Image 1 (cartoon, rainbow, N blue to C red):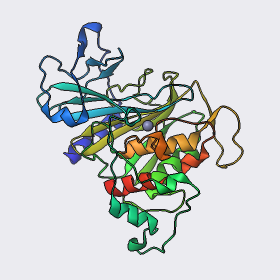
Image 2: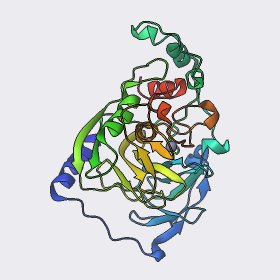
Image 3: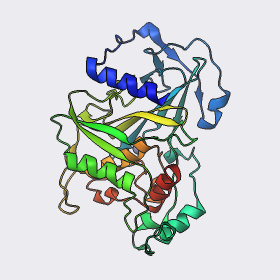
Image 4: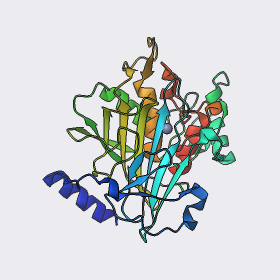
Length: 331
Ligand SMILES: [Zn+2]
């Protein structure tokens, strides 16, 4: 399965990806809205066909993935807006389609917790052969161990190889912020202590390909290229990520920053002022989705909380729950 994916990716890169024409209104279907925990039980005929669209309860539409695939869109909420629910489209191997609309911020999720991982973090990863470091309790993100896995992928879908990604050429978000955010997740760089994990990423250069995230923050069909770009999103979203999962493996992920907002792009954690979002901090959050983490409530102070805040450079380093979540997915 993996070899086939790699082969098709290579061919696509060589000849260019040919995309199907946009679906017409007649091709938009409505699928049952279920909870993540109910996904195994749904069964609906008549909402089939990749390249077609499925309608969410709020009227937005998203692409229907290939059989056996799940695609999730998750966003950082802009200041002054209500939390944006994550939206997932899952297509069973028999072609049936269901959608999930959930968000930790609404209390519909139960956060995971792992006492063993918590002990690892408190000990500074001492059982990994590192010296013990006691977290600084002055930062509340260091004392909370909450994490979830990506919506619609609660079984813990993850990358089985390094995440290969491109930066859209010409965007204002610098490579330092993109790499900094992705590497913080992959390296387990914490605000008070580090906890290494086995996740990895590989920067492949710039591309003219755009992300597959729609202007309303839902996911279009994947083009098999993982891209970080800047483009149109709804005003309530600072940035969004689409992850494409097949069973327990994440195979593609795209990230989009909202072109309507101003981002702080310096590598310095001090000096941000005004109504700017910290590009690297936002990227760190989106990288969590890329690697398979879901949202936790804002009261946890974790990087994976939903609301975005201006100049929140503290988001560049992981909280205890973020570290535990990454270590759980990537031991
Ligand atoms: Zn998010």
